[in-house]
Length: 51
Image 1: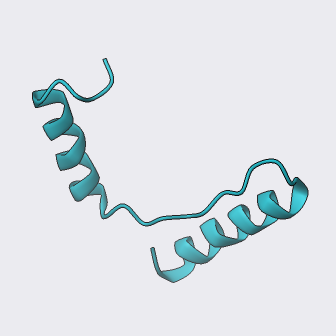
Image 2: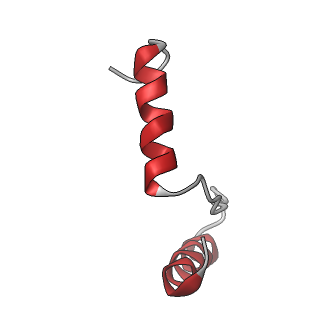
C-alpha cells in the first residue's frame, strides 16, 4: 500500500512491534478493495472461507 495511508499503516505496525516482543507484525499489501472482495467471494463459492 502506498501513499499517506500506507505510511500510517507502516507507522502503526512499527509502533506495535516496538511496544512488545512476543508477536512481530508485518504489513503485507493484499490488493485493492475490489481484489480483496473478489478473493472473499471466491472463498465463499469454494466453501474454503469463513462462515
